Each structure stands twice: as structure tokens, then as C-alpha cells.
Image (tube, rainbow, N blue to C red):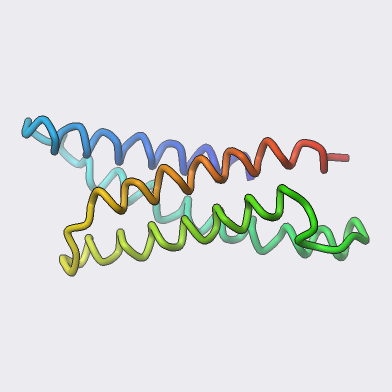
Length: 126
């Protein structure tokens, strides 16, 4: 999960670079949008795979009830926010939406929730 959160952080950084360029009305860095998409899509998949693996690990490997920890709550929130950001990002990519500010806010919130889940997960480590 650390790798997926790190990948999401790189995608966030690329997205923030796009935002800075848009707000300054300056030239966009060549390939900035493509870099953001290249990082963000696998990051969302990795986060969701990790999210699915968490409850399975709790139940089958640790013999504990899934979704009973703060880590699970924050992980669920992060997963929902990543899905929302991805869905809106897909609409932006297809030209069906121009809600880039909302997409950015969802992305930042998703990353922060994932970081919180990572910190809350330290107590679950063996």
C-alpha cells in the first residue's frame, strides 16, 4: 500500500503542476496531462486492489473482523474518494465535464485520506 500511496502522491504532484499552469495562464509543460494520466490510472487501481486486500487479510490471515478499525474507516473513505476523483477525471478526459477544480479537490482529499489510513495502519503491523 505504501507504493500505491506514493504513486498517488506522484499523480497528485503532476496534477498540481497542471493546475499551476492553468491558473497562471502560462504554457503547459509538454506532456504534463499525459504524465498525470499515466500515473493516476495505475495509482487508483493499486489503491483499490489494496483496499480489497485489507479485509481479506484481516479475515483470513489475522482472524479478526474486517472494517472494525480506524484504518478501515479511513481506507474506505480514501477508496470512495479515489473512485469519485477517477470517475470525474474520466469525464474530464472525455470532454464531458470541465470540473477540474472539483476533480483536484477530490484528488487531494483522497490522497490525504490514504495518508491518514497509512498512519492509522501502523498499529496493525505485526
